[in-house]
Image 1 (tube, rainbow, N blue to C red):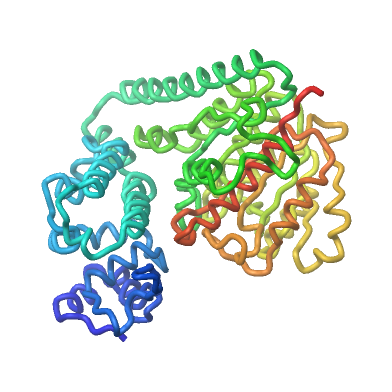
Image 2 (tube, rainbow, N blue to C red):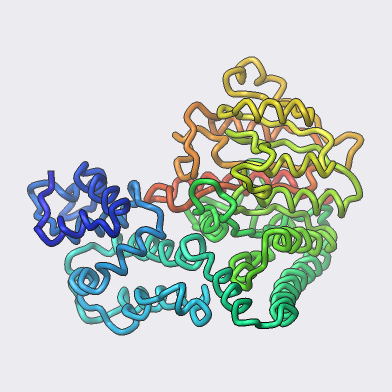
Length: 504
């Protein structure tokens, strides 16, 4: 068991951050963060063994790098602010003015001056300069290059979460200050409207460009188009899904596999797959826009893409609350309800989970209330409460639980949906999979579907697929090598192949 110096032990027991430091100390003492392996002289050596002396700050750094039981980032930020200067000056070989500025961000006092992009850009600039430095630092001497890559990834995730979930209320606090200062409400609303209009204009113009490109190439009856919705604040547990869209894109094009789907379609063909970017969710929320308006912005973004024939949307979440505004927009744009195939460990049909009508656990209640779906089939369910079953009966939902999957398998692998309605919508929550296949989710629920089970259901489905989403991948809980990102990317690839149609 590691023995800490008196200074570090005192820090870990500091009552100002007891909850954070308790988790961190427990994780370190258990040795779970010391299992990262690196190669040296053709020999694999585990970090933390008695054969290699590790300083206290190195152990804490490994906790970030290996991403094992990392506490929520808003608590890590408190730790960084408390011990940041001394810690980083020892570990990174110097704490210069840029890093001091980064660690000194105060959401209450400087929120109006520190936008999301500035925080992320500061962290990116610092780490890039550090990685390219010609002067060897303590960081370079102590850690191999591969470890630097992992640190950059997780540190950037951490700092992005400062601007996302951990300090995402900055905009709301700023708005309250403006109101308290008697700033006219119409002035605030005009500013919000300009941000929303700019956001919709960007999505719309990108959709026009991609639509024109596909039409110019010819031969496409339906072209799958990615739209990211990086929203995580309606999650009831962890908010990491807000960071999923760029991780999924990175995994799709990472080069570890070829660009051909199992059905034989080439993703490099823009008639099969293209991308219109992300809805700037956090930037909109920073302006004090509430969820009612935000959901409308998401719906309007979806409609803008759907206006460009032959584009069909595949939405990258984000938590599952995004499915409501997306399905609403699809149904309204097509002029009628759709059939929905929903793969998930949970039914997400609470009336208003924890009092939030837009909770990720309530999205399908809003969909069914609005009449946007004729049939809703929920597959993979293995965590359902009495309310979930009652709500299912209320809305006539077809719920297929994992405890009876072996009996239901033949039916579910030969589904025919969408006849008599406007088409089929597929919503895939990554936690429908057993955590053995996808550990990087917020709500780990054992006993789920295998990846091949899911692909069999998707590949064999008969129906006109008009839109889909892949949600609830949480990069902050993924393995170091990004296994769940690759799983989510594979789901996106196969759904893109399913949705796209080329003339013969």
